[in-house]
Image 1 (tube, rainbow, N blue to C red):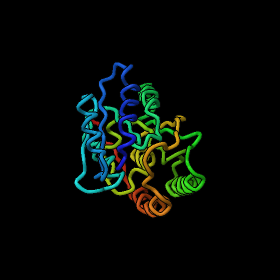
Image 2 (image 1 turned 90 degrees about the vertical axis):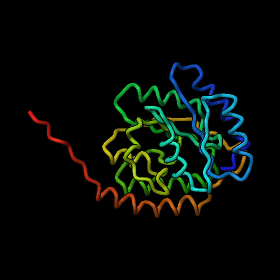
Image 3 (image 1 turned 120 degrees about the vertical axis):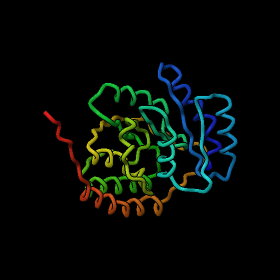
Image 4 (image 1 turned 90 degrees about the horizontal axis):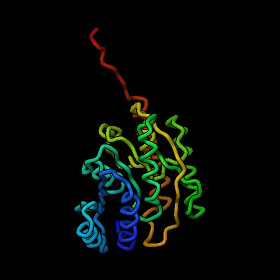
Length: 228
């Protein structure tokens, strides 16, 4: 949302990151009802490079809805994500995909070793991450890192709800999938303005924990018995 300044450079970085690989790939941009020139920038990017395409929301729906729409729009067997503000490094994504292809995990989640954020945002993130791990019983180094990749089946049964993006590794694990963690780069925001504050990040995230905690307690798993 409202990332017109970041789109051209981020688009180039994505193309450069995947251009040296033999994979068939696409980059889906989700415009969350931007009020600036983001949609025009995305249109130009898509016209210049068919690997890039975009969808635009009629009204603002939030990050979880944007991710969900991107999942549904995507066509690949492997899905990778990153934020549109330029702080996530697209160069990390091929490395995560290669780690996934080695086997042993259904999702590879990045964790920011060195965070380029303010002290206040770092504290809020640490509180939220610690609370999520404590209440869900899943130890994830950095739930808030958007640099990740996973097999398509990891999200096909995921419950859609506002705040889903804060719990992706936990929800993947609760569905019985396995995940690995690898260190990734995190860059300072150079363009545009952040859309988050303490009020719409920390407190809302802690509230969402109640729903995820309920989901964990009420979730069930089964296996079909094979006939001999």
